[in-house]
Amino acid sequence: MILVAVAAAYLAGFGGVEFVSRRLGLDPEVSRKLVHLCAGLSAAALPLIVSFHQVAALGLVFALAMAASQRLNLLPSIHGVRRSTLGEVCFPLAISITALLFPDRALFAYAIATMAVSDVAAWAAGRRFGTVRLPLSGSSKTYAGSAAFFVATLVIGAVLLPRLSHGVSPALLLAAPIALAATLVEALSRRGLDNLLVSPLTAALLWALQVAGAFA
Image (tube, rainbow, N blue to C red; front, side, top):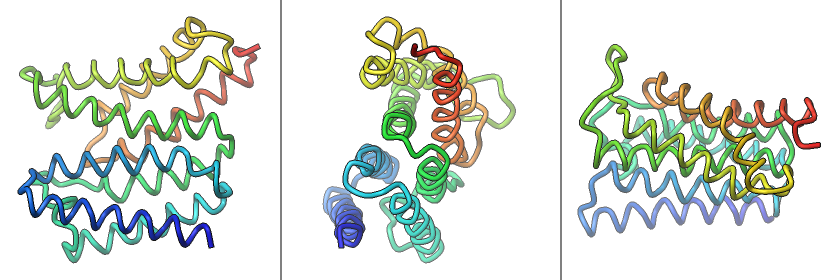
């Protein structure tokens, strides 16, 4: 019953963004990132109320729903961007994969929050300050965007990891290599595939650090 209520809440949120976007004439890039941020942050907290298997199932359902919506153009506020991207399908898939592979609240929250917040930070910085693009063939990524992604990921680490690493300074030291790896993956990804790759990678690196005793 809780899972149905969660799914209904997400659907209502998507519908609300679509309504507001049409009424205000928002740029699809803006409304898309708003959905990305809000849906991602709420997904990071889902294991507090449902099981990880339920989170994984919900992510898969919404990945299929987004694929169908994209094909039928049911949500222009999300799909109406000029560039070719699979990001809206990849992100819920990443949520499912991360929930299945790393069923730990701290790992999951850090990984999903990183993609939710850092991706939007990179987009905003690139849109405002991104005059110089990265020297990658066919890339639209910018130095400003990648710098913002890195910094945002560090800040998320400072907020979420102190409980594991016994303080903000150790958390930042441990978050730095994770932030660097995630930033490189985000910079190299095309067509929204960073939405699929960053969260599982972030969770895997944090798990590896735990196994190595970095948080002892």
